[in-house]
Structure formats: C-alpha cells, structure tokens
Length: 338
Image 1 (cartoon, helix red, strand yellow):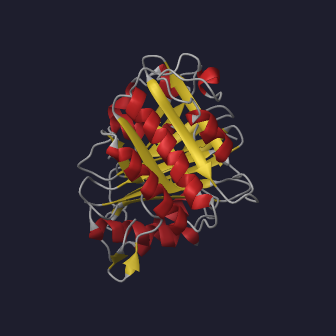
Image 2 (cartoon, one colour):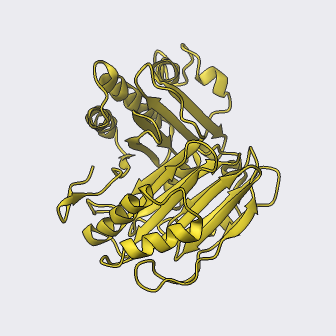
C-alpha cells in the first residue's frame, strides 16, 4: 500500500489489484482485503467481513468469468474499504435471481452474491450478457453516513512498481465540488513524490478558481519533476475543466453524444501554459471522468453501450480493467453531474 518517499508517504494509498487467474487467487484476495481493511481503520468483525466479501466476489470470478480482477482500496470520501470486481465473462442474464440466496448455476449453495449484498454497507453491480460484470461492495462502520456525492476512483501503479506516480482527490462537500487528477512525470518514487506534493497543495487551494489552483500547484511542484494536472469543477447543469498535459476529460451519457476534452501542452512545475477553463454541459444522470494517460484514450472515441450506462462508482474500475496500460500508472476518477 505504499511506503516512504523521500521521508514522506504517497497519499492516498493506491488501489491494490488481485488478478483472479487461478483458484488460489481467491484466498489471496480475501487475505489482502482483511489486511487493507485494518489499514483503513476498520475494527471488530469488519475486517473478516471484508475478507468474506472479497472471497465471494473472487470465487464468483474464478467459477464464471474470463479475465477477472479484484481491486481493493479505501472508500472514496468515507471511512472503509471498497472491493471492486470486474470481468469479461458471460454476464448475468437474470441479475435479480443471482442476488437471491439459493440461486446457483454451479451446484453450490448459491449464497455468494446474496451474502455480499447483506454484508456490505453498499453493493452495486451492473452486468450485460456478452459484455461482463462490474461490481462494487463497501465495508464501512455501521454509523457511517453515505458519501455526499456519487464518485468513483481507481489509482494503480505501473506493473512491478511499489509507488504510484498518479494521484486523485475530490474536495468540497457542498456548493461546487472539485476533482483533481495528477500524473507525476515518469513513474516510481520521483513521480509519486510529485503527485503527493500536488495532493498536499490541493488541500489548501481547492476553493479557489481553477486557474488559481493550477498556478498554486505549479509553484508547489517547482522542486519536483513536474506533473500533468486535470481539474473538474461541478456546477448545477454544467462542469468546468482545466487541464495541462495528458489528463483527459470525457462526459458520458446513455442517451446523448459524449464529449471529450484534452489538456493544454505543458508540465505543471516546469513550463506552465496560460490555464484555460472550458465549460461542458453535465446534468444529473451524466457522468464525467478524468483519467491519466495510463488509461488508453481510444476507449473515449466510441464508448461501448455498457460503459455509457455505468454509474460513477463502477466506471473507473471498468476503464482500468479494459483499457489500462500496464507499463504506466493509471488513474480514473468519475463524478455524476449535479
């Protein structure tokens, strides 16, 4: 989950990936979920519940899916652990029956997804025959209030790297929430330090205008290798985007044409162009996603109907699973319009 970076720690912790390519990976997913749940501050029976949920989701992938993966990470915005599962399997033609205890297609007791739904503080799943399934379960303390916004994120280090050179955050519980995705140049520890520096600076800048935030990040990153930065601010019925480098924005809707925007050429911390703010319509039911260049951009040219219908909690996991470049850090952050 990360370690010291030049005397600091990379925050927030990156997403942990467990590929379900063998039955032994089911046990690995469960043990990692228990371990990370403790690191997220969960106590009492909650770490064991996290392990049980991860085991059920991973076991389902092992039995039914193709190219299955489990992602483990802190819940965005509230205390707890989020367990995401994605696959390219056959999908579930009768989702409601699959969520009922006693329903099985493999001769088992049929308690898997029904148990996940009962144990989890929140469980969300989308599936389509021929496309696969994406699910998210959250283990949180019983008195935890729901997050103020519908938000999802995944942040993965380059394959073989301990540190993630990407970072992401959302600030502003009320009014106009603002999201940041930052990609430190390169990968490994120096990139992680740049991303960490940007996240720390963002904490004190988030209520300013988007150009002022970019300029503040530029000053903070001068003694690092620099970064690409993308900012998204939500308003009722619209969003503002300001980007420098390869942090892209895509607005998705199941019924309307999607919109794409790229950042201006430059490196925050080194050669900053004049920040440019662009506005895009964004209404309730539409989802905006900021993503780094560790997610191949070709997906946004013709998003599949399955991706277009995914809620913000599930979209980043689906993008990372289907379109990630393993040689680079990969981050996606999504939010629903106001």
